[in-house]
Image 1 (cartoon, rainbow, N blue to C red):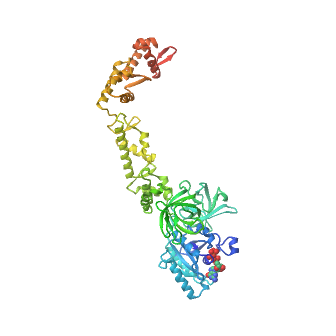
Image 2: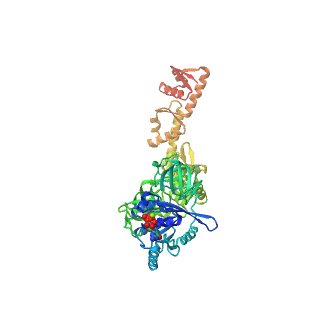
Length: 623
Ligand SMILES: Nc1nc2c(ncn2[C@@H]2O[C@H](COP(=O)(O)OP(=O)(O)OP(=O)(O)O)[C@@H](O)[C@H]2O)c(=O)[nH]1
Ligand SMILES: [Mg+2]
């Protein structure tokens, strides 16, 4: 529970009257009689069915100069006590704090008219009407939330307030303690005998003794040595509780307000967020590229606002916006934030984080918004849709939704339109589109390259830059298994497709092959062969390449090609020769094969390479 309200309206006195605890803990606060930084207190009340209810209080300063401290404390609250002094009624920070509560979507609260002892009945009634007007239509509207006059001097109204608290607490749903734990740090100090201690309101999940946690945004790991909840040692803290953690392996200098603790290795800080941004009616229009102060939970930084497709947000309007943060913060979808004008610093608006990993340029916002609208409905599906053909890696799904891995896997498995491909989720429709495009890419390749047997896998991969390697490999393998694609050596082809020759090309291929086959080892000069063909040189070159690829022709040296049959015959000759002699020289080779020296040397070198012979001096050993 948080307090809210103008300076000196009796927030701290009220917390003390309820809990017996003075939340002003600083010496300067006591001396000046004002609250400077947030303070804490707690209260046990008997619950409805005999159990006891523990309420944690965050008491905030009302002074306008300390609104940023107020913001650091108010982020984790479930309900608010809006404190308005009956002798002063609504003042500037009454408005500002109330605006902040609404922008942060605080849903429950009680309006407390303090200092009722200082005014007469009639004045109290006037203030009551004034305040009722002020809160009309909000979460504090008299139709759903009580307004209670109290005096901390006489004690009037305090018991009634406690009863109202019990009623209202029953209406507040428990926070999800099975979720990923997040603790925004609001205080850091050293405790004698313990070392480093941080405190905060645990906004989700649970923390146990000996848990390993990560500090955001710096990424350092820490271990939880001890836990206190509302000032008492505990084995665990659960969502909603005021939590103090004694941390091992870190000094206070490495920690500060605004950092956040969460389980290690699964979340990521971000500097760019897509948001739903609301501007207060009292604010000036917010221009594209405006710089603002950004507050979320206990953190604070500077943000630049981009408004895709619009020049400004008018007072009272809500719009899609993209924020560039000066420092990285751990933010998850649905996190609330406040923006304050750069100078002079006043609260001007706030909103909800939609995306912590914006994928699309803001220019494409309209298309993007349509999908984002579905976010609150089914965040897992929405993000799978947003990633399209790329697919959503499972690990990325965790930090983009803030859901636990098991939860996401379960949710995705229940979605009939979603498939899991290795470590990614992807829409079945997206897979179908990739399959189709893959087949048509190979088909087009065949059409454009009739003399090539297929496309290389790398070339095919490069046509799908937005598809992750994981998804590509699986879709591709699937197509091969289903025999829609085939591998021809290193190349990818459609079944039944490959080299297609026109009649004269096929005829030329025959001619070339025959010319080489009939020449045996006395191969013809290439020029001679080509001059007898009906096709141009480039085509003929391709045909020769094909014959080489199919190993019908074999390249023995840079300008000597032989038919495979001729070379096989040569091997046979050498084998028979081996029966007679283990060695052969160039002259003997020439006699044996009937070739000239011009051919003999390259052929012998070829045989050496093929390990049919081995050269020793001027002779060869037949192996
Ligand atoms: N007469 C009377 N005085 C009160 C009552 N509640 C608070 N006060 C006095 O009002 C002054 C301010 O009270 P605080 O509780 O410090 O006010 P606050 O709202 O916490 O002030 P900040 O934290 O600085 O914003 C103190 O002198 C209190 O004694 C009340 O019910 N009746
Ligand atoms: Mg105070």
